[in-house]
Image (cartoon, rainbow, N blue to C red; front, top):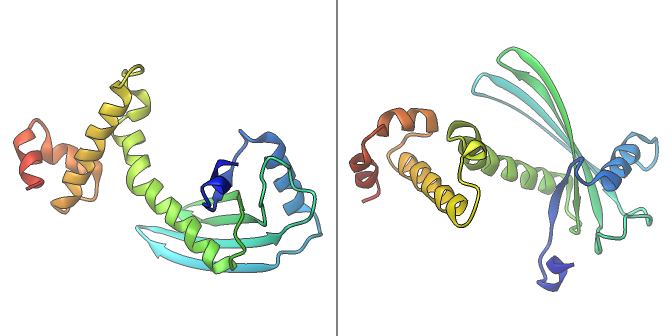
Length: 181
């Protein structure tokens, strides 16, 4: 595996596009055994929502899927609470070659979502990156760089909302450039 050749570690979210591993993790998390070796929980209230997170960490069982050498832990991450007075519940699964505590894994998972929510989600949803017509050559990379540039300019002048930044900078390239000085 390239990660191990580079002496790097991994904490990866497993989704349905890895059907064998995903099914294995779902079944193992629902079975009475094994029990988690560590559990961490956290609650927070912010921006009109209440979120409870629980990370259950499981150790190596000996029958891991072979395409993940060095795999030592797998996690079941549950999130539930209320957003805009609407209940929600989600379960995600992660794999890692690290032997960390549940609290350390919780920090890593939350750090990932912080990046997702502050960069990738605004680019996809607010700036329409997934619907962009640029599909070949260097076009997608070039436009992605422009979107990153725009988000950085907005954050430098204290605008956290990308939608508000679009209104603030609308047809004003001079404002965007001045914000980067």
